[in-house]
Amino acid sequence: MASWAALSSSIVEYFQGEDFYRCGYCKNESGSRSNGMWAHTMTVQDYQDLIDRGWRRSGKYVYKPVMNQTCCPQYTIRCRPLQFQPSKSHKKVLKKMLKFLAKGEISRGNCEDEPMEPTMEDAVAGDVALINKLDIQCDLKTLSDDLKESLKSEERKKGKSAKKAESHDLIQSQNIEAKLGSGEPSHSIGVLTVPKPGKGADLSKPPCRKAKEIRKERKRLKLMQQNPAGELQGFQSRGEALSLFPPKARSNQPKSLEDLIFESLPENASHKLEVRVVRSSPPSSQFKATMLESFQVYKRYQMVIHKQPPDKPTVSQFTRFLCSSPLEAENPPNGPACGYGSFHQQYWLDGKIIAVGVIDILPYCVSSVYLYYDPDYSFLSLGVYSALREIAFTRQLHEKTSQLSYYYMGFYIHSCPKMKYKGHYRPSDLLCPETYVWVPIEQCLPSLENSKYCRFNQDPEAVDEGRSKEPDRLQVFHKKAILPYGVYKKQRRDPSEEASVLQYASLVGQTCAERMLLFRS
Image 1 (cartoon, one colour):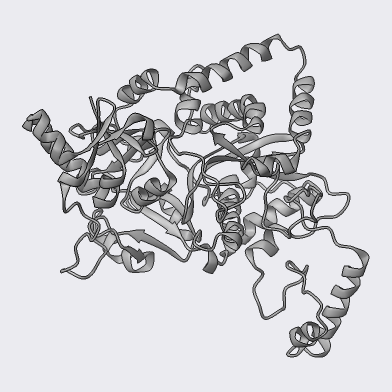
Image 2 (cartoon, rainbow, N blue to C red; image 1 turned 120 degrees about the horizontal axis):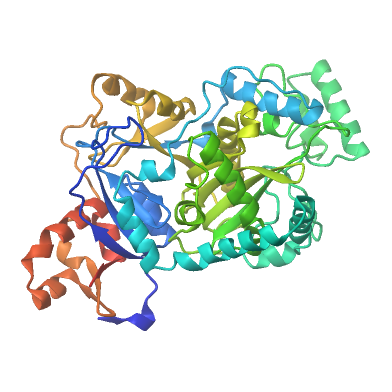
């Protein structure tokens, strides 16, 4: 029996799903059903294993749709970034952004592929009143109070310009090496060449190229024209490094995602875009410094895109669903430089936040949680653009952490036309809701055309290999002590809770049941 002092595991509180709730996708008032648990704290490995069994988090609430009963079955979808090639529509979005940055051109063409996620409360499809109650009982209050104090302080300030300058200076004054040492990423992260030691680089911009390098590039292009087949061999034989992102791709090869994102801009470009990754839980200094501005973007997004009244996008709502996270920050030496855990990927245009992607960095993937943006910049298709940047970010993290090679896009809902856009990022896989194996989406779509709920695994003999086989080995946390469920149930002798515990074990699987601690009062 372990003591409280030795505790370093995930702690969860499970709630057996019995009711139906309003669906945020089809708007059915009582069509959605899910099981949920409150995660007081959770390791990134446990959450990785849970999402590989169809779970998903919203704040500290972790939920799993009851797939064969809910009105809109939600299938976990992942993209394979290492093999990803942008489609024509993706390229159009990236070119639109480059034209806007370079010349200030505004294209207000068709944005039909723009993602349209429901509000976070609707997406949870669970007992929001229960989540609110748990927030009050737990530790959300501190983060929420910090933001409320910032709002009060902001009201006392006279000018917006002073506020923006102060916020900008605070971020710029951070010491980059100190941030890397503490596990916080440098202020800008992109898929680019590594800066020289001791020098901070703005990684949201294309790599700086010296005149000598430009001459080499011209020579390389000339060689390509003269001898296309031997171009690579000739350059490598002289020991000269090829540019990671050459300005021109060979005519017979498509441009890579990085080529399209980081295409060189003129020196007199109209706008400057930076992408900064800041740790949101526990909140880093950069996160705290920009939290107020981020909240204001969220508020406008909810009011304009989701038509919420001005008083509904509250501080507590923002912190509950998008800032609070159960994931522990982990910084292993073989992991990504920024560490594992929960982050906000901030899109800064000319010194102000225009969009924020909420993401989790896990052992095998980058998991997209949510995106909100300034509606004034809807013409930039920021939903598609941010997804492409997150795919590129995953590829960058893979360079150092080879097992981190997937991009999880949340849930794919075939029965909801507005949610089918996630299937456009290929190659991608859907999770079989019965055996929890990944199946290429092309193999799943014909079945989904015939039925909302499908078992994707075509082997009729296949079973859930990770299923709960020994529920008595499940770990329980009771009265500040850890003990196996087999021992706990003998002490309690209360058969009424056994059904709930066994359901929990079946949903999380044997591995997580033995590793996570199930809180019992």
